[in-house]
Image (cartoon, rainbow, N blue to C red; front, top):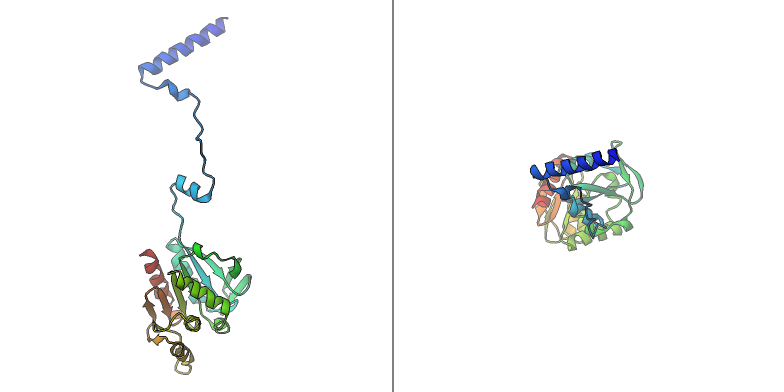
Amino acid sequence: MKKRFIYSATLIIVGLGMVLWGVPLTLFAPQEVPSTLPTTKSDIYDKLNITMEKKILMVVAFKDFRDEEYFIPKEILEKANFLIDTISTEKGTAIGIQGGEAIIYIGLDEIDLGDYEAVIFCGGSGMTDQLDNQNFHKLARDFYESNKIVSAICVAPSLLARAGILKDKKATVWSSALDRSFIKDLEENGAIYEDSLVVVNDRIITANGPDASEDFANMIKELLDN
């Protein structure tokens, strides 16, 4: 009985103290559980006020892609908070000319175009064998027709030309004093060749080789930021 009296008196004193100090007694009332909880990823991002990053799709040859043309743009764009997915003709570990590795964990048939803002076709001798890849052609056309950024570097602009999206557009491509076949390829498919490191034609970006990798990536970033 004595303990109960002390306990009750303590509660009364604490309650009076809280009232005198302006502390609301409802602080200790049971809190109402929200009637609706976030049930999807987008709902959760909205509740936490998190902005989902833009995603970019990079395309490489499974063997002998040009390392600089993949890793330099990838690094620049990731530092700018873009998410990168990489695809090729198969899943596994794609190998660059200089031994660099790109992990391919998704296939072409798993690509949801709505997830991406841009596509980048990387060059290298391995991409020369893929210039007539009809799946890559369709991918380029799908991005182009969806008003997304389509970009290619080194020999890969020839792939865009063969896909039919460079007609009457300025573009550049890799060439050398001994090999101007890729320039001819562009022109035969209706493109207007321009001898520059990087050429921008609306939302199509082409670059002529590894030395253009940094400028190429920065131009993609600039267009994505606008």
